Length: 69
Image 1 (cartoon, helix red, strand yellow):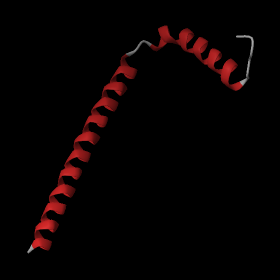
Image 2: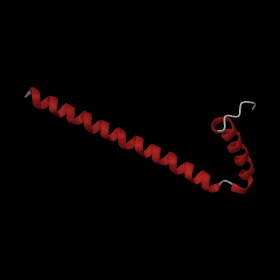
Image 3: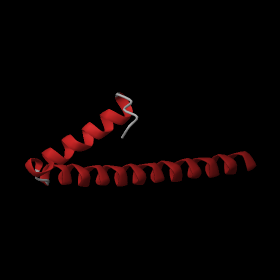
Image 4: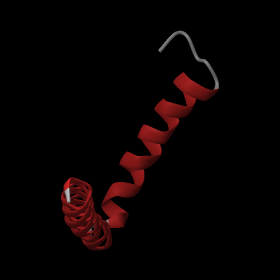
């Protein structure tokens, strides 16, 4: 009798964890969807030069190892 009660409690815990996992994945999916929409809506022409500058800075510091910047 005690074994079946422990099994039921264990099954309830597993079900609760699975429910929490699903909710967490749904929140992640919603955030990713919002980011996707934001990326689609930005003016890429306006960002072109800015992104080039940031990429140049990143590349010169991290990849090329430019020390004097």
